[in-house]
Length: 363
Image (cartoon, rainbow, N blue to C red; front, side, top):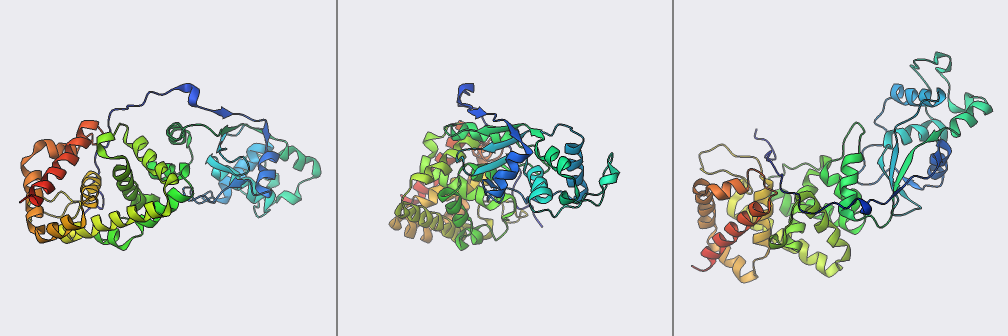
């Protein structure tokens, strides 16, 4: 069985200069009680689309965290996105916050396997004296809140560097973290379309938002256009997703129809080789290539109805010409294989696929 997605180098030149003054973070005085109150008033979101399961830690690990508080040992810093002050999003510290919730708010955690305070094994929060409970709640913690007004691309860098817990966020999970609401919902809708699933042979999983990463790529290059591409790739994809915030329902429907058109055509033309680098029909089928996906899908999406009908009649020729292109054009193959986030690589592959389609349409 082939790999699902080709592992390629997507690096590119970093274009945007970074201004430290754009990092807007404040550090309010915080204690465990601060976390408790926000949890009780539903002012910390533990169940955003991008976040991991809030209860990944086993009881031993949770108990050891509470033991650290009892021993007055400092905890790692907590980070929040404070775009909405009445609903902080957890950037880093989800499992620690969930442990505090389980022990003090929900009172479901029974301490076990304590290393230095075995006398507290088997105890729940209510089993502690009022003095000990006050000591736990007044324990100081360090919290950083990313303020409203911090640019999305700067937030992206912060999210990717700050996240330290056991399951690091993928780039797409970070993009969803930064673009909650309409953009996140729409990208998920695209990823769930049957036309997309069929074109990718139902092989791209939703786990870690792999499928939404593909939909995000389409949206970004479709809306922003490859001619305007500026590295780096992740920032470009985040910008494309954020553009969805300002789109009307009619505009979103147009994008969805274009995405469906592209994937339906890709299935018709390439069958189960859609978005794959199989040069010869006798070769083993290759994994899906992300660069081929966004390049082919966006070019097909921009065809007029008349052009679509003409393409359908010449699907065999397109398939053959793409194989020739991959077999003979080293520049094109490099553009979908290594350092694919470089500006010249992006423009090379888009222009060559565009020219291929134009040549066939003009015959």
